[in-house]
Length: 251
Image: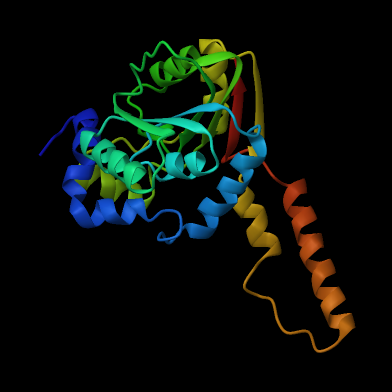
């Protein structure tokens, strides 16, 4: 068993096997966090300018996000340390006739390509870094002047969750806390000149679109229910703190 987390990241997809790889390729629809992923995708597409644009997807795994972006007609390069993941991603792109989705097996902490990108994305991937400083420095170098890096990370407390501890014990991978303030501070230190932190949209969605809805007996009941949902959403925004959140860093 590998004891080095970097080696654990390289071997992760080989160790989860064919069934695990198949499951990862069904994201976002085949995953228990489907609603969360779809909300984040909506936010991401709102933050990106319309195609054409070049995007680098750092820590892409089997490439489900890269493939979704390619379907929207972006030119995407997916980068992952696992050769098994990249083989699966490449095969999926070919099967789905998406030549604008390319993949490369590479450690994103030493990523160095001559072409430059309009956007970089870390989608639940930066917290797997051995050195987030190195990862953000490489992301900065990969962007065009004025380009943006967008991160979706779990924030504080992630390392201590039961799921993270199981992954560390079983697969010997990094499962680090990645607070928004740390991402911003590190991003600024490597050269990003502007930043913005936004709330994760799925949290707001849960406030408005929740399982407590009911068939309204009267129009007054329906209006009252809608007012209650909007009031709870407003209270949520008032007390929102940027943790976890979407971080946007501009070069």
